[in-house]
Amino acid sequence: MQIFKNSKFFFGTLKAHTLPALKYGYNDLEPVLSATLLEFHHSKHHQAYINNLNAAQEQLEDALTKNDVQRIANLQGIIKFNLGGHLNHSLFWENLTPIKNGGGQLPDANSALVQEINNNWGSVENFKTFFNTRTAAIQGSGWGFLGVDQQSKKLRYLELPNQEIPQNYGLTPILTIDVWEHAYWWDYKNVRPNFLTNVWKIVNWKDVETRYNQALK
Amino acid sequence: MSFVLDPLPYAQDALAPHISANTISFHYGKHHAGYVNKLNELTKGTPYENQSLTDVVKNTFGNPATVAIFNNAAQTWNHTFYWRSMKPQGGGGATGQVKDLILQSFDSLDSFSKAFTDAALGQFGSGWTWLVEKDGKVSIVKTSNADNPITQGYNPLITLDVWEHAYYLDFQNRRIDYANLFLTNLVNWDYANQNLVNKAHL
Image (tube, rainbow over all chains, first blue to last red; front, side, top):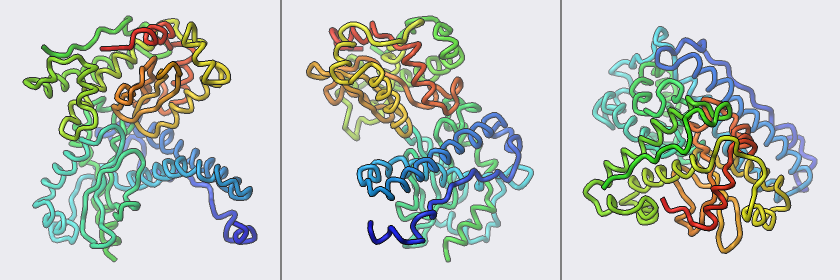
């Protein structure tokens, strides 16, 4: 740790995270997601991950300064959880868009993304069914991801519990759906499958496609 | 023989304003009832349908072939135990022999409360916070999703449901407020003391 003590790159690099603004209003995802649900989810749940992450980062910087290795070790879990929450939610907001802005509209059938989905699942409809079946079956809290395998560059589905991130499993996510109860309870109560059936109406396929093309590079 | 949804020990509005009647209506009437229905569906025609709920939980734990039965049996068990872990005008410091045991394992009732709420917050994701007894000592155990400490040989005394559906309506994401309120206004120490003597067997 002595090596880093005088490094100007070390301290001050853990910058405070901020809540990204949504690209749509809280009532713009209705009727799929109500304004009430969206406002809670964004301004309370996501904000709390950011607040907790920032607090944990401050603690980490302090622990690093003091070379308090026990505290450094103890903070890993809180940082992992809250950083995962921040990253997953940030992606999720961009993967959604109002119906009036193209929510639910598939990319062109000739696009690389659709071709690759067809190669893997036969059709986009089959893919949605597959995604929903696997994601509905997640026990407790978690996320369903569609991503690009970092090695093979192939499309792959992955479900993860709590706030795990697919980047830690060799997958660059291009689409994610939150199935923590807070993501759907207000509008769908305990019927997660109904949420999953409806959420596709607001999926921002343009964003998913952009991310796919980016991940192939 | 099928499993039944245990009656609530109190009226749906009995824990208001701490936990609203609306929360109880959904939590009991949809979530808990849903687990019972699914359990009956999955155990029909299997040896499990004639076992006690506690035995089904123990017998299906840790076996990939029976994980769906375990999840629904354990959630049925956990929720029944949760409703009984609370009572109207409950809460406050522990009483009876449970209090003595808590003071043996924790410096004070306050430090127990802090440890309990820390455990509630430290369960990232869905799960349960338990006060348990084993070999004459009490401790706090957190489990994730449907997991139940009876599968680890513990005797549960009380539990707090920290799945989001338990507190979303009344507390949104403020799990700390919900956990504190459980301790100050709801926890049923009589039930904890009963479980110390007669291990809960549902």
